[in-house]
Length: 202
Image (cartoon, rainbow, N blue to C red):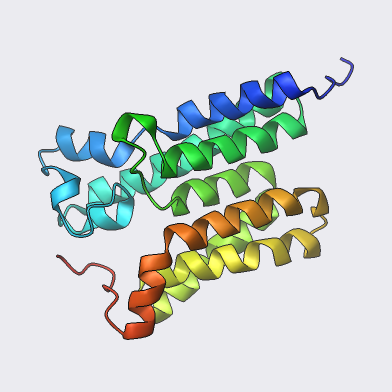
């Protein structure tokens, strides 16, 4: 099968498709299905796994983490299967933006960490695995989830270069900047010493 030509129309299509997939708020859905209440009124009000964990339900938090990661991976794999690598990167960016700024929730979404890792695992699994390891190590050492996220994002472009995925650098920089932007309040709290610890309620 000959390679599919990259066009502006194709890039836009897969960016939109990625956005739609990424905007599925699994944390909100699971919280409602499991009777955990409205995540907006719990902890940080975020829709991601860290805030779901503040409900005390570890199963719901784990499912949120897995599903938020899976939607990023699914967006990438669908684009790769039906188009090409350029489309896969466009879908990745769309999925990340969709998670962070879902239209269904008034553009108030999550911080994108699980989706970011899922995207990397699907695009370039060595980079994804390395970033997962960095995230786990930093989070375990500091007991601060956002530290794991920031460390993983900061190291992602380094791993892209080391593992020979230089064609992903622009996307990697964009995703890293988005992670840092979404964590700007966390960064301020880390500097002030007031950031919540993993498993801490409220």
